Amino acid sequence: EAGVAQSPRYKIIEKRQSVAFWCNPISGHATLYWYQQILGQGPKLLIQFQNNGVVDDSQLPKDRFSAERLKGVDSTLKIQPAKLEDSAVYLCASSLGDSSGRFFGPGTRLTVL
Amino acid sequence: QKEVEQDPGPLSVPEGAIVSLNCTYSNSAFQYFMWYRQYSRKGPELLMYTYSSGNKEDGRFTAQVDKSSKYISLFIRDSQPSDSATYLCAMTLNTGGFKTIFGAGTRLFVKA
Image (cartoon, rainbow over all chains, first blue to last red; front, top):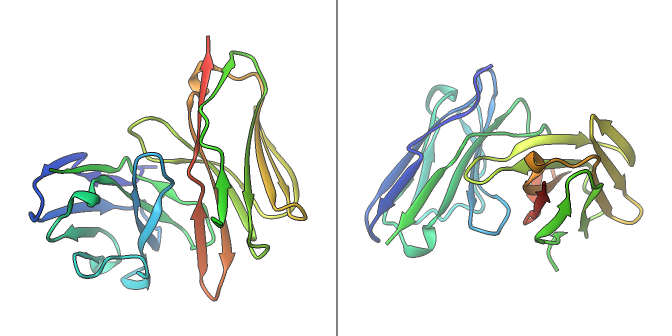
């Protein structure tokens, strides 16, 4: 079974630039999550999708972050404009249901200079 | 007070030791409890998933949940250098939708 795929693996940008991350979940997983993990901290949920719909985006900084999941499969997370404090690893995860364990991708390490 | 507390370590043990990793939580509504292992520059990997109080064993790993004390543990027997990683606890409650909170993780080093 293929795992969760993410790209790019690394990204370096300057503040105020924009960036986009892509995620392909495990086939058949209806629930998709984007997490932000700052060094030394646990993952923090940014947004959760159930198929195409948003279930929870309460911690997503909506003035600069946006995400979509077209056709209930792949998803993209965008930051525009980026701030220094956005430097983190962005993890995509998927699960069969929202009470199930998550399967994480390798993450995208973002550095904002 | 954080909802989930986890000692960041680092915890350093010799190969073959029994490792005990712990988390405490404040909300008695948490129902599902998980342990993830995260190697450096990798995503977290689900190790154990438990629902009720008690013990669950999988190979060298045992997850223990004590709901009365709001305390969960992960035991690793016969620890190996390959177990060196960050271990994250996570727990889920149902608030009309399921909400999962992760601990900050404990860094474990197993010395050969």
